Length: 271
Image (cartoon, rainbow, N blue to C red; front, top):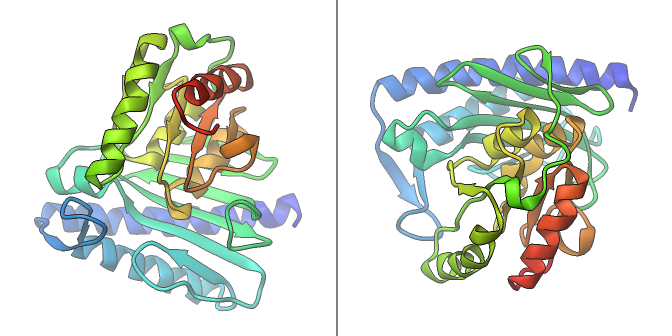
């Protein structure tokens, strides 16, 4: 697909993400409660998650009725155009519930496959409604924050790196992640856990983090943030040096990526 086509998709994704952000922040002011849980009692969904995704789906299909949609809260819609929208209506739902200003609307547009290991990302937008920040990227068009170009931090060794990560919702998964963290923490400047994978990846793009890794991410968690980080100069990958997957996602400038991947391997993670 041409750069012009990717730019047009980015414009549409931005308009939809901003409308969804306005909707979600207004709903947050009205109060939030847990609607249901998923993988564990602490893996929550609010009514706003579902309503925000429904709004995004409607806006996408009004503009592009033949496209597919892969979302967190509803069934995958199979399209006929070869273009899929990957949606996380509220990434960082626990932050959203508690009023912590680190949650986001994440929208990516991809082609070629519904599998993140095989798709090609065309455009991505991540909006933090609490701060009004808009992160975006298009394939080959660079990454920007509120219109200003982004560039990852370079020439940072792991010993001086601020590294972001996240944790799963199941107790045994968290225990295993904590064991990895015990090995990694003495090797880095420090660790941050902010609660939104999409914003973590954007933080790498913006130089607010030097690196990020996490296990257990779904496609909608990292689809938009991964393109934004890549277009800002990060290497984004997963197991065996391949694409980011549910098993592992890593993002950092290329040199630091290799050092972090090696440290994770030594800690028992197949990077």
